[in-house]
Length: 68
Image (cartoon, rainbow, N blue to C red):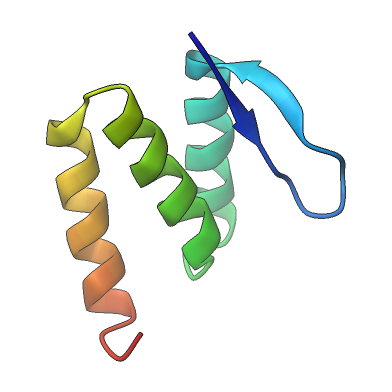
C-alpha cells in the first residue's frame, strides 16, 4: 500500500507507508508545532486502520491547538 504525501513546496510524491511514517515522524521531531505533519500522519494511520497509533497523536494535537 502506498500513500500520497505533500512536503513543503515539492510536488506530491508516492511513498510506501513505512517510508511515509518515518518522514512524518521526522517532521514532527524537527518541528513539533507543525500541525500538518500530525494531521497527515493521523490520516495515514486512519486509512491503514492503525487507530491505536492515531488516537494518541490526535489527542496531542488537540492539546497543542485547543482553539483550532
